[in-house]
Length: 154
Image (cartoon, rainbow, N blue to C red):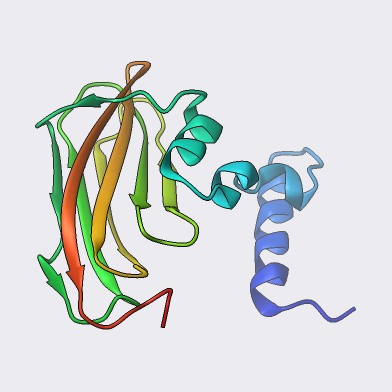
């Protein structure tokens, strides 16, 4: 059996942790859920509908997006999101002009701070759209980033 190292370690850690508590769990049962339909969507509205059952959001100034105004390389664009909202359930990051707009989605446990810092790939100059689900409602904010060297598109 020739497993990649990362898959092997995930399996060992997942089953080892479950065995320590006296239960038997397959590794797939403890891995993160993959919103396949949302990541296959070709438009922002399709991705939002797949994630949240509706593309309707409320614009808010309680979401702060820190990203460069000009990204010299679209392959690595740093993005930092802070949601100053109560009961944050998830944060989704979307790049409008990417072939697959949904870049990432992060789900939060109760009482977690709505904060994410990551690097994303952008196919060209476009808005980064951040959608935050908090207390059952969807909120959105945008920031335009000019990409000088392509990431997804070349």
